Length: 275
Image (cartoon, rainbow, N blue to C red; front, side, top):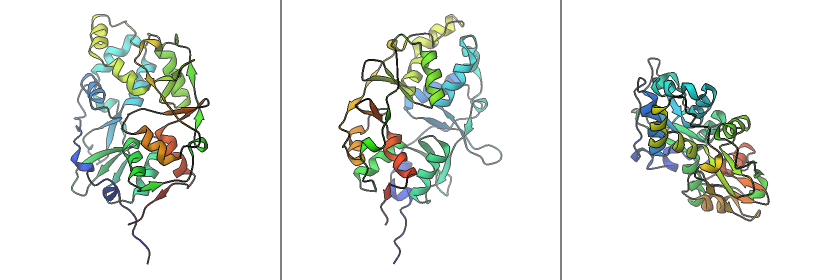
């Protein structure tokens, strides 16, 4: 007898207990971006448009737009309605198979997706949520972290935040290490800096001030966890735990949640438990 596939709502039975704000498309960005900072999530959904499409505000994409604007237009960006900055938000049905969620991460190239029930209730899932499925034995892989790791990318500590973001977007990295250390900055930390009350107040007083002009040494940095190259992906998922943005390092290599989940999935070396 063929076993039934595991559904998303079975793998995440409490998904709809978490409430996330759904934005009015006319909400100004100055109200939206602090929400991203406060909720510590990667996306905020907008209410469905007239065609029934789901759109959202993504932290990483907002940083990309701010980078292209230049400091003199930062204030005007903050006044724009969020629908002007929104992008299509990958959406899956809660009753779809868990494999569909992983495929959606891969297709969107972002580690999050909107999950919707039949009655229209929605929630967000991310790679951080998916990592926990290793501990629950819902997913597993025989790979070791040495087989999914990437080279550490670092920049000198005097590099400006603007220059660092240029490099991060060019490589599609969410993290950059401070050269000579095991410490890194990542897009969430940059969002927290840009939309902190102190920075917003400074820009309000001087619209020409460049909030991206500070060196990366001036940002709060996170120390990466050290690991052995023989660590299994299941052990790596546990080590990363609930620390958002955390990564593992060894011998000049780095392993992120994307590496732990999506690299083995892409190469068909991640197993999903069946019902």
